[in-house]
Length: 253
Image (cartoon, rainbow, N blue to C red):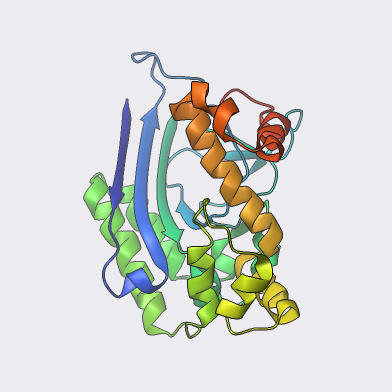
């Protein structure tokens, strides 16, 4: 059994949130589903995850025994593969933030979120325990998203960091076909190059250079997955090399 759906954030939430997602997979032998293990490749995402059913194990390398992820988990960008092993009843509620949205909500450096997960209870209110309990008890996907959405609204009411030009620039930098140089992006953000690089790493978690590389990598993977025959013709050599370097597992997310 597999269920997946995306939900639009409210107008108020759109200042920091891209979308809500829910994914529910049950491995019960009835469906020909792949094994409950995937490898998440490099990505630029900042997310808040809720896992109200079976726990998730995070494997930082293929030989690792893994560690149990918190039931409410904050994650930042990844510049290397991270493995995830699911239980037989995998239910994920995902709050997907804009590139600097999680920084604006939590107001601490996103560098500590890179390639790892943080227990959300330590950084958000202990109200999150109530959210977890509500999610566990709910049997409606729409209601689960509503529970997460109400929680986000309460956090927004407490106040977030003000929007700055760099926040809009980080969104524009998600365009894999953009040809701007980093000094040009810095100018758009009304910052010197050094200020831009420092502020970007603080708000996004990684350097502008790494961010651009990962954006292009994600675009390359989409081309590879949808039109493999075009990948060799359209991808720059450095991006193709990055794909080969990062594809250490056939199951990816």
